[in-house]
Amino acid sequence: MLERLVIIFVYLVLAKVIDLILIRALKSLAHKTTFHLDDYLVAFFHMPLLVTVAMFGVLHALSVEPKLSAVSTFILTGGVKTLILLIWCGAISRSLSRLTHEEALELFGAKSIDRDLFLLFKNVSRILILFLTLVWILLIWKVNLSPIFASAGIAGIAIALAAKDTLANFFGGISVFMGRAYKVGEYIILDSGERGEVVEIGIRSTKIQTRDDVLITIPNSIMANSKIINQSAPQSMFRIRLILLWPMERIWTRWKNCSC
Image (cartoon, rainbow, N blue to C red; front, side, top):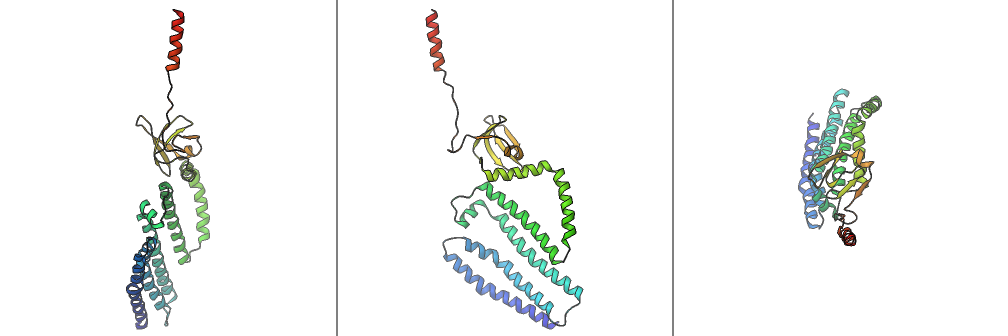
């Protein structure tokens, strides 16, 4: 028991040394650079790295002789690994949630990143991280995934049939984001006759505002399969057709004069 406590204490000291020497040195170097990605990475790895080093000490302590019972070792080892995984996945998800469009431009040094594509990337990434985290936790606890995936396949078919309109709107939204036929602020006309300025592009629907200040919400499944006339492309300006009446007035005047 004493040996295990000593091992854990040594790893805690190692984590503190890493915090005082390595992390501070990396922060100092990152502040001297002109780009901001390195500062972001140092801040991101700081706490998860220190906790991981401490948790490795617990895993090391569990492996020394005399070993605990098989059940105790399995539970404690699985719990520590699960905690490490949750810390890293939580840090990634939290960083994505807090990352704004302006910060992304600053971090990656890009002149322009489409805001809608950025939001789509954030939402899809968070869902993917949650799914992979759950699968990884099940693998840590040695859960047989074959029956789960088989059941999930059957349940997925049932859900797909029950929510086919929602899924159609979701994939239609991805098609709209990737196709980039229109953007927020542009003036569009649909083949069904609706026309107006795009005020919001969501995963499920697109909202346009007419010249009469009427807000129209159109499912993305319809937008993905509609003919769209973008009057703000390729140049960012509205186009309005005006009917000139002076030729007709001249004809009418000539006809009237002739009849007299």
